[in-house]
Image (cartoon, rainbow, N blue to C red; front, side):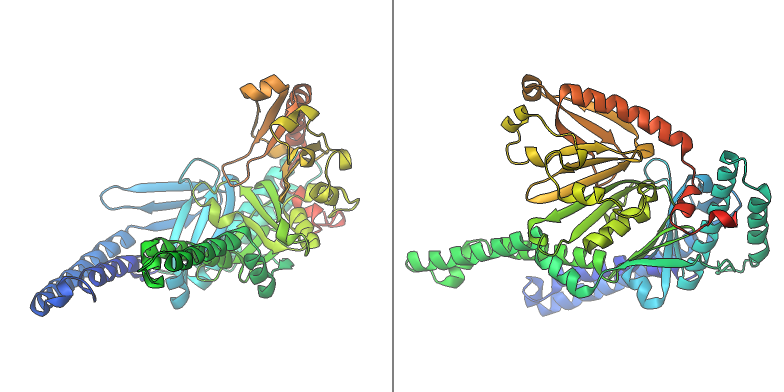
Length: 502
C-alpha cells in the first residue's frame, strides 16, 4: 500500500478527539465558565491528542509494513496483521466485482482503495487501501483482464469450436505487458477495456426526482405539522409564546427530523450525482458519487435480480428507479445496489438489457413495457384469484407473475409500481409459503431466493394450484438455463464480440 495509507485511514480518530473536546470544553459547557480549569483541561487534552496521534501513527505504519498483496494468474492474495496474521485469497474464477472507491479525504489527496468482491460468505472480499488513483485504476484493469482470460478459458471448455490458442494468447499478453513492481506502486501496462456509454443522469432531473420522492414529502409534511401545531398551541394556551411552544413541543425532535431529512438528501445525491452507466468487454461499468466516488465494474452474469420502482409522483414523467442484487456484495449492498437512480423508460430498458442481455433487444415487442405499466392478465401474466381480495383489496389486480424463456417477471404495486426480474439461471432456491388466512382462502406465496440484497422476489397471493405449478416449473427452468449459460455469451449478446471475429 502507499506510505500515506495509515494517515488517510486514521483521520477519524482526530475528528473524534476534536468532537469530544468541543462537547466538553466548548461554549455553554460547565467547564467553559471556569477559565483556569478550562486552560488546564485544554492542555491535558492537547497533550493526550499528540501522544495518541504518535502512537496511532506508529501502530499504523507497523501494520502498513506487514500489509502486502500480490496477483497471480489464478488469484489475488493479501497478507496483513502483526500480532494476528491474516492471509486471504480471492480466486479469479469466483470474482464478482472490482470497485475503485475514493472517500472524501482520499479524493482531496488523489488516493483510492480497491474493493475486490468474490462469491462467498460475509467478509469474503479483499480491500486494498490506499493507492494512488492512477495505480488503483491500473490494478483494476489487470485484475479484470486476468478474470476475463479465465472466463474465456471456461467458455472454451463449453464450446468445442473455441480455439485454445486465443485463451493462451491472452494470458501470454498479460504476462508480457506487466511492469516490474516497485515499492509503493502497483501500476501495470494493461489498458482499460473500451467502454460504451449508455446512460448519464442529468443533475436537474436528479434534483427534481428527489423533491418528488416520498421521503422528501413525508419529511417536509412532518416539519409543517410541527410548526403548525406549535403556532396553534401558542394561540390557544395563555402565557405561552411561539418560542415556548417550539421548545415544549420537542425542539430536539425537530432537529433530529431535519437531520434525518438532510441525511436522506445527501445519500440520494451521493447515489445519483455524476452517475454514468456503460458496458465494456470486462463487464458493466457504474460510476457515481458526490462526497465519496465509486467506480464499479461488475463482470457479466453477476447481477442476480433487478427491481424497477416508479412512485405515483414520477408517472407524469415516466421516470423509473432500478436497484439490483449483485453476488459477492455481502456487507455493502446499500452502496452498490443502485443500477439507475432515476431515468426515462428507454434508459431503464437500456439498463435492464445491460445487465440481462439474454432478454434480447430492449422491449422489441413491448413485453417489458406491458409488464411495467399493465395490470391484470395484460401481457400473459398469471394473476391472483378473486379470493385474494380479502387480504389484498387494493393491489390484487396489479399483481402478476410471468415466466419467459430467460427470466421470471413479478409485477406488483398500486401507488408505487414495481417489477422484479430474476434470470432463471440465477434462482438460488424456491419456497412456497402459506399462512393460516391464506390457507383458508386457498392462496399461497412463492418466494424466489436470490443472493443477499435489497431485492426480495416474491409472487404473492396465487391460487394454490398455480403456486405449486410455478414452483415446479421454475425449478426446471433454472436447471435448464444453467446448463446452457456460459460467461462469454454476454459479450456476444451486447455486440462487443462478433461471430465473424471468432
